[in-house]
Amino acid sequence: MSGKRVYNVLFLCTGNSARSIMAECSLSKWGAGRFRAFSAGSHTTGYVHSLALELLKSMNYPTASLRSKSWDEFSRAEGPPLDFVFTVCDKAAGETCPIWPGQPVTAHWGVEDPAAFVGSLDEQRAFFKKIFFELDVRIRIFVSLRLEDIDAMALQKRLDEIGRTQPLNEMVRG
Image 1 (cartoon, rainbow, N blue to C red):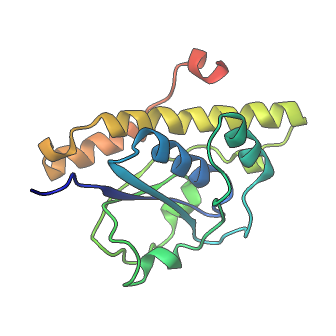
Image 2 (image 1 turned 180 degrees about the vertical axis):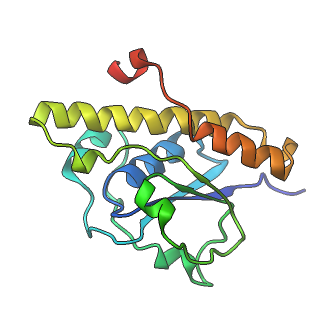
């Protein structure tokens, strides 16, 4: 009797301080038991953005173990074999990525950088929330896929489509 397959998913960004961290938390929630979520950056900041932590805590996500990690942790032979790698920022998508263990399926799910947003503190908080929900909508669609029933080409097409998905404005404001 074999156990249920758990897929390893890595979200990449440049700094690994906000977008990829929020995506990791979202997938950990919605994909619990089916997906194992990770995040990393190509040029890490060394910290998780305080507004990302504030938002995640306000939504009851566990944050104690969150940290900014280099993608080198995941490109080593002893790293977890990856099934999926999603870039969530345009800079990371344009960089030459390492060779990932496990020959993962890759897609670009780019969203704006909330850490670079300029505005009042309330506007920054609202922007972090907007970006979180853009990623959250994509992740909910992703976890709804019946991966065992999709061939490689159809899966790649679907993942690329998910990367272009935009949430309804009502969801972002909620």
